[in-house]
Image (tube, rainbow, N blue to C red):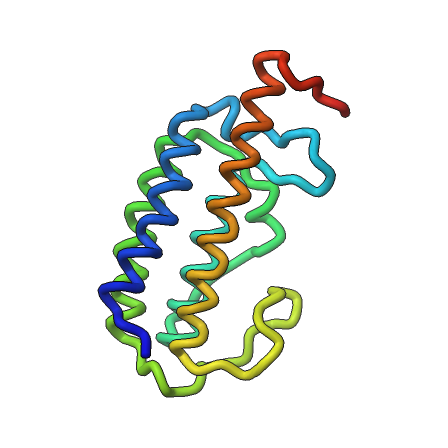
Amino acid sequence: MLEASEFLYFADRAFDGMAAIVGSLGDDLANRVPSLPGANSPYALLTHCIGVSDFWGGYLVNGRKIERDRAAEFTSTGPVAPLLQRVIDAKARLAEYVAGADPRAPLRDEPPAAFQGPDQALTQAGALQHIYEELTQHHGQMEILRDVILAEANGSLEAKR
């Protein structure tokens, strides 16, 4: 059974870890896409994670109207400071989504197939678990991206473009 405080503890750790990476990279490097096939910038991945949290928790679990352009999340760029504030706000909203969830209830709508979520019907607890899955997988991915971006930036790894 999903324990709300434990879920939020681990989700917040993933959000905080990604925010720390983006913050440490700064405006230039956080927006850089490394020379790995199919890679995204850390900025874009963190933007995507906010989108995942709001769509799955806000809309599918709580029924709130959420405007989302998933494709644009992966190409987003901008200054780091406002994004870090968006993370703080997203964590607060996630706590509200969890508080409003009925773990055994079905989702309030079907997720679009293009959003590449789980391929089975979920309960609201399952949707929250999917948020956690996305946050943790992208946190780990971002750690690798950071290492490649820093290596490319200091010349110890040749960028191939």
